[in-house]
Length: 127
Image 1 (cartoon, rainbow, N blue to C red):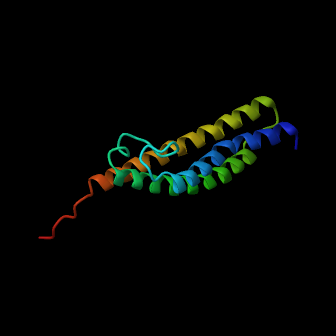
Image 2: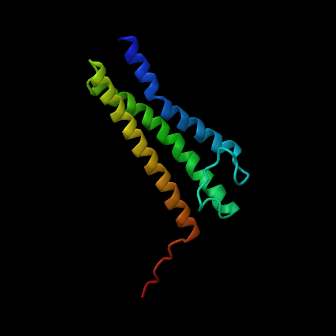
């Protein structure tokens, strides 16, 4: 395995590693609203309850997704062609795009979770 491939493998693990570290950070030190590493969105900044719920949802999902991203990134990289520099670049871009789509999905699910807390669905009464 060449040095270039090893560097690409490590580069592709930057997003999963950062996601994992943010998940840990949010789990431990984001009790105060508007904390520096907290999950801040318009909805999460509404009140303390939504802030705490956002941190809880986000930290759990970030921790799980970071592990999944790391495994799939390395797996994708082993199945995608990487013989030439062009193939290596295309493979790297493919993996990073996959990681970005997954992270957007995670953020969307946190927002949906916050909306469900803010406006819980009422069960229909049986007739």
